[in-house]
Image (tube, rainbow, N blue to C red):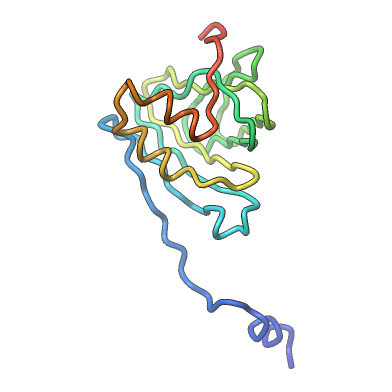
Amino acid sequence: MTDTESTARCSKEPERAQQTRTIRLGASGSTIEVLAGPAETSGIVSIYRWRMSPSSRGPAPHFHATFSETFIVEEGEVDYFDGQVWRTLLPGDTAHAAVGDVHALRKERAGPATLLMALSPGVPREEYFAQLATVNERDLNRLHEAHDNHFVDDCGR
């Protein structure tokens, strides 16, 4: 028996094609693509691609009490706040916010930008992203709290 045959026999599930789910973030044209949720990674990580339209702003300074976030810029320019200073991220640049670290993103340039976001441990954010597009102002704080987004002073935004 070859190694390949052995691996195929030990597989718990037949191979299946990964389907990317795209979530529209309101009328701006920005989208979130769900690349791998916690169910696909045994809860280790969630991976999303955020395609920011030219008019996207990004979230104000905030932190998460239960997961960390890593951002990788694929295209465009995005400003990242690490809790103390803002810096511009270019394609290939990475930024990491550990559990509890204040961080923010903003896009001030007119062009689009694309970010990969890896959340660890994996948390399901699909419902949060989908609701952001339609939630009314009155329920926004409740939505943030329910999904572990804790906003802080705007820190020179």
